Picture 1 (spheres, rainbow, N blue to C red):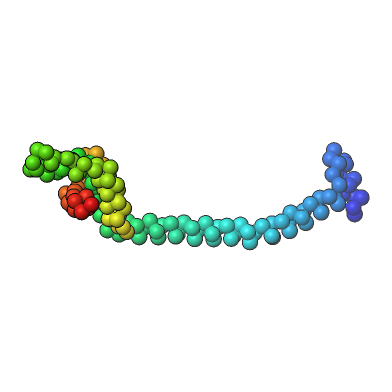
Picture 2 (cartoon, rainbow, N blue to C red; picture 1 turned 180 degrees about the vertical axis):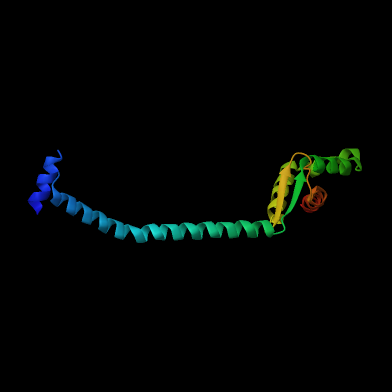
Length: 149
């Protein structure tokens, strides 16, 4: 029977060894059987990842996020107002320690930023719904800290 197949294949102009075809076919079948669980595992893993991301995104949106900002312009205006009320010889912005004031602003921003609270540092105002300035509170804290030094 093997020779009949070889003859038929030769008559059609093809010279293919049927032993190689059978071996190759069985190897492909084994490969498909072993790859099938891997591909199923990949699909299951992909579905789990997508579902967890969708859950995380949904829970993130449902949280109440409070956005506040600290404005450099507002803090400077408040400081100029404070200094203008002092004697002429005592007038110094941030008690003559502007570098320390900047460090305190950055520290206050880090301290106030917690879960669900975002504090932005900006040059001027930020406009939007449910966005508030905390520059006045930050200015008071800076004055307290610098005055105590």
